[in-house]
Image 1 (tube, rainbow, N blue to C red):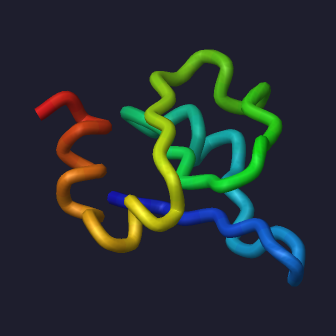
Image 2: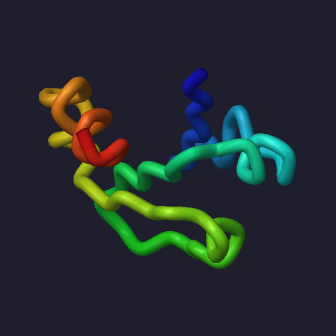
Image 3: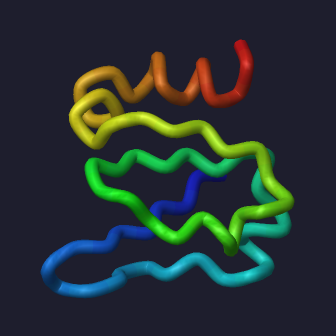
Amino acid sequence: MIKVETQGAMGVENELTSTDIELADVVILAVDVSVDESRFSEKKIYKTSTTQAIRNAKEVLLNALGK
């Protein structure tokens, strides 16, 4: 399952719950600005740009999962 939280000019949409984060195998941060990563301190984090995530989503997912 994939859950996507977005943050932008409109604010936060589809905010991840603590349960969502707890159940995650990996957290993918597709960002072009710095974000507070403290919510994900116990998780494997994979960072990429938003452009990379949009243009090469399959590659990003496979890399994040270590496949």
